[in-house]
Amino acid sequence: MSKKLYRSNDRKVFGVCGGIAEYLDIDPTIVRLIWIILTCSGGSGAILYLIAAILMDNRPDYVSRYENQ
Image (tube, rainbow, N blue to C red; front, side):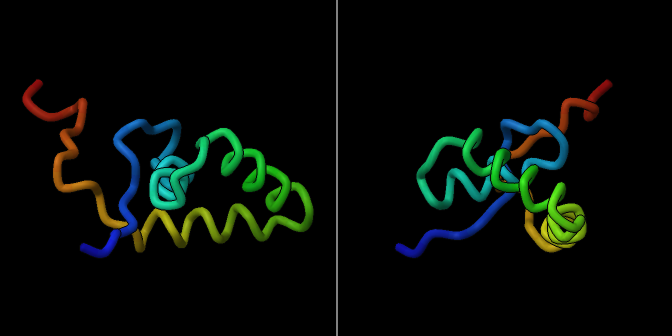
């Protein structure tokens, strides 16, 4: 079975870094630090993050904390 890249259920903003960390099987803090470095060195990290947030799907088991209120 092949792995699929999803946004993480353990979200800080959109779940992009957590989803990438789950896909690569590494600690999400490492991915977040790399993303911060990319953002601070020219701003490309912010643009890539927004693109990834738009393109990546939610996990099939994702339930919004705002549903059923």
